[in-house]
Image 1 (cartoon, rainbow, N blue to C red):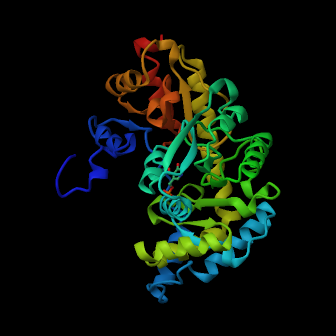
Image 2: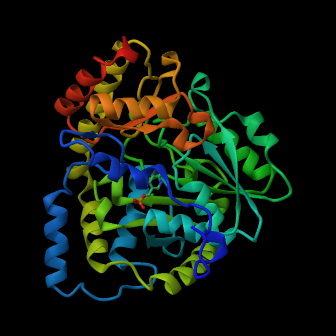
Image 3: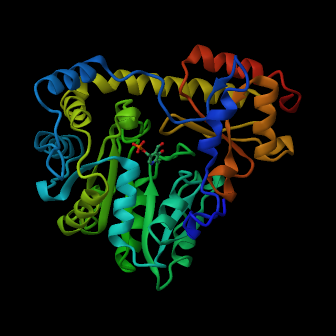
Length: 385
Ligand code: PLP
């Protein structure tokens, strides 16, 4: 909206498909909402109780600027034990994933620097880059290539102004997981062209076919990688707004300084909850992972049994990005009709970048029974006959 009191750079519309989906879901009493990546499972009660008890014990104050010391130690321990990566304390900072992206971009970008993002992308990335005065450059990926990054296409987008590439694997929205070859190719180009890699690894738990591999696992990448991770999805803790950053110490120092100005420190109780989550991950995570895996496998089977829609076999996350090109309609038209006729809320694929046209994204954030009901309704629609 244009208004003399609004800074001119916000005169253009910054809303995303995510912001409007909440309103749409309220249209029908029996709406099944598969639009948002907010896991339905309530945070493990052990985590909640630990946060509560720690609050009673006095963890109600500002914390260290880089986060609760015990939580930082637990994060370091996790990288060592689960991923075989050695991290120094100065290379860790507690944050929250959305904020972490802003801190990372602000720390590395000069005005007009370019940042490559692969599409279909997490809807916030382009504007997150613009807010940090950078220029998003979109690299399309394709179903025919398993939504992996095509190295030649990546190289062709690099200019004098390219500062970084943002990668996200396991991926929202496609559910793909980058292969070791893809990761090594990105790393090779980053080194050759002297780029920073911002690796958004917030779906670490949901890598189904192969063990999760961080960009930090690739030789020589630690010195040019900023890892963003979060407790939101890996522990169903979206409302706690807590996560972490791993980066070279000099970048952590800059991000800490920016963060101090914006938020001072992160919520102490959420950090204590995250500490309990990290130190009890072996008890908490396996059941969650199996639950979401069984949902995506079930939903994929249903999709592939319905005419005019198809999906690749699920590899990671709890999203499915299915192809509806055979309907002859646009993603928006199909998504609108699914809402109107089946009362199921989905997101049109083009909300994740132009190359998402012809696809629909669902988040499997309801149980198998509800997913079954959603597909029972969808398969009665004319366009899927
Ligand atoms: N990155 C990706 C790829 C996401 O899908 C999301 C949330 O859906 C985020 C970042 C933001 O995570 P958080 O809610 O922990 O800030």
